[in-house]
Length: 338
Image 1 (cartoon, rainbow, N blue to C red):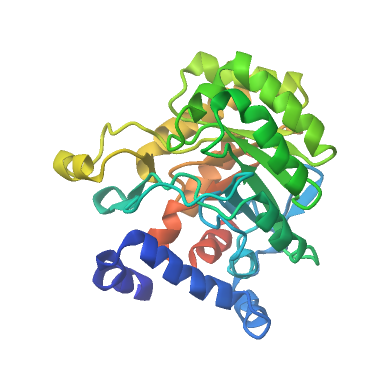
Image 2 (tube, rainbow, N blue to C red):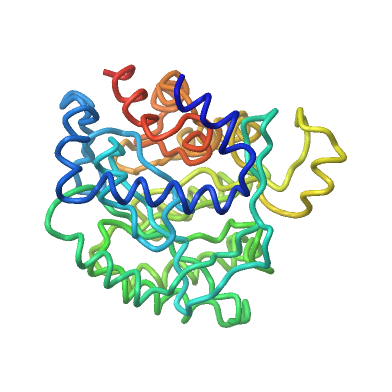
């Protein structure tokens, strides 16, 4: 209730990216040594929620998706707030500023977002240093890696391999992002004939670190199942479904407002139905419970999380819901699940 009032009267009036950075200061403070134990006393997930997958133990199936903490600066705070894992990134081999601002917009009527951030991050080497400082226990940390913008698509493989080599020794798992709509040419890498050699190269570079691939919701059904089959064939440990959508269908926000926002991926409830459909397709193709399927897209409530778990998800992630639910979001979900 308090956060809802704060959002409607203050945060909603702020630039979304500025509000995110301001919120991250609070999150980082929540993970600081004097404060974190107090926060955890209110937010620690019930032990019954623990999930074993990827050779790891996740204290709850609910984690924070890539894009929220691009540079691994808020991991301790997000853990203290009750998230079972944090997927940092997307990280690129070469540091980059991302797309010009403004690049993040709220679809308030839809409880969604439009973003064209463009993989703004400090680079794989910097992320590796930050993760190294987190390795004394704590939350499960995944690293989501993508293509550097200055690197041509034809040279994507060595670029991804550079990031994998930097992060695999430190991260608990790696996720290959070929599905963001905000890097030119990136989604073309999802075609099986181009995706296979990329994933095989990253698989070799990752060594024993679990490796997953993140796909778009806009793929045709037959391509979703083809990627799922290929992931099993080349020995990937799992798949993340899904990224943001380029579709603008069914939005409650006026067409004029959406047009003014411009290009970018839509997240939140507008992608919910398709994300669940993709999850169902993947799990039907790969029923083996050892194959980890992480469902993300339109997840906001404990009922949403339970629906994904019942549909075969191993783990569930959220992002956009944090903007609309606030810092106690993970606590609310974990308590309802338990």
